[in-house]
Picture 1 (tube, one colour):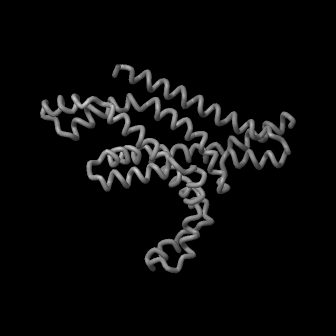
Picture 2: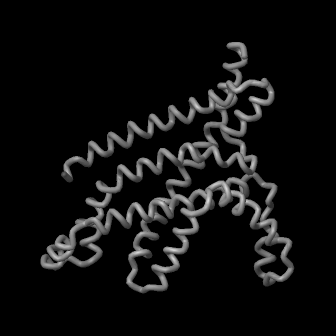
Picture 3: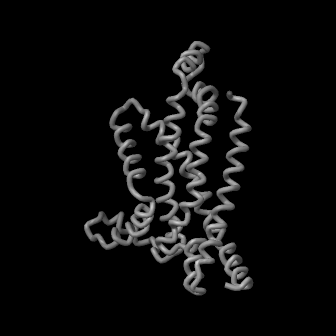
Length: 234
């Protein structure tokens, strides 16, 4: 490829950086709070709740994210063909346009959120359970409620302990956004594959790899800064 062609491909991929970052941003926005809820539900003393949460986490972590994206995208069209569903469900599904790009994006976000929430749930659970029981007892002796204890004593320490593991998941997430191309969502990897076919060259894929590398490096620097900021908990 000539220099002009490389520049052209670079600008095309840069144009589709936005959709990649949208997947990344919305997944973090939804999966981190859901992961915390999942961690608390898994630790719930009411066994049916903890069992169901365990099953959810096992399924999400035990099956490929690519498969989950495909299921999330094609589930609605298959359900719309099922005449045995209740009328109110059929009515709800009939209002969904599966050809709409927003539907495709929403399916991707659902799959990514459910997948990463399962991983964050395990990270947060490990962080919460790593706090010595004596700290709960000390807070109780000061007449602090369970809510006050969790948010003022436990949570700040948990955040410090889960940052390294969470950072690894976040860096993995920016690379996993490339899996959205499996349902032909217009993002960097899909466009790189299209340009590769146009120019019969692997260069567009190397350019796409450079985009992901730079994004991963930025996230690594941010994570290191956050860890340093939280060093006062040592």
